[in-house]
Length: 349
Image (cartoon, rainbow, N blue to C red; front, side):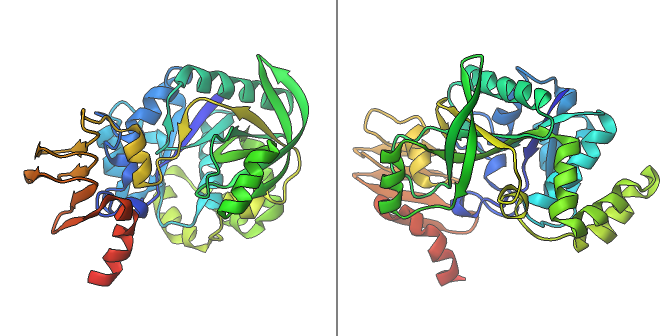
């Protein structure tokens, strides 16, 4: 039985001041009239019924999840009392899902990515599910075929083909590679055997728990104790015990050590929306190439990014400029320097 686990606990600091710790990017309408989380759930609901879609998030975001996904069962919101990176929260969720759906296969997916060809994505996801059902100790990840030498993503180096499922190749993973410099990224693109790592994993719940026990024994023992707790005491024990798990990513804690890892190369218009340039690539523009969000009026302007957080912003005669309003200030600068907004946060605090 295929279940989805959407990871929605990130703080989204790369998009500060639009994205804040109180309301990070997965809860924002960055690309249209729906939030990134709403887009993720709506996309998955075409393949997986809502009762088998789970969201793991931090305790401070639980109300945002309930507000934005009102038809999600309360039991399907898995709360992490404190952020401890991805390995513990995935194992916590696997324990939880496996209690509800015995022998569940889990697709672990980010909450804040863009996928333009949703039908193609769902076909790939279904092929991954089919492969894992026939190979219960396998891990399948989905890798995106690169179209540029991107330095902001990790990469997957793949090898021989294992099989073809519904036109989707399943290939062996040689290794995972950290974000490269530009020279190395160009080499990967030329090589042709490297894919962007989208952070999507499909596995049996029992398998990821077995691997957690094998490679992160302390985390497994803590979570086993939490999972065995009576329902009426669960939240109290979770609060008390969860802080004792290891703070480590699933990539470092498990993926770099595990065997039987496979990748399906895919091309369905993916982007992790991890930079202001991504917003500019995909957000609707006016006839003069302006990206405007919120209450914005403009006159004789071109090639700008203007974001209002509530107050009217009126611009006239501007080119190649960003204007971003936060709760308590407005940032203005050359558009090619928009990524430096994060650095300004430290300089003015």
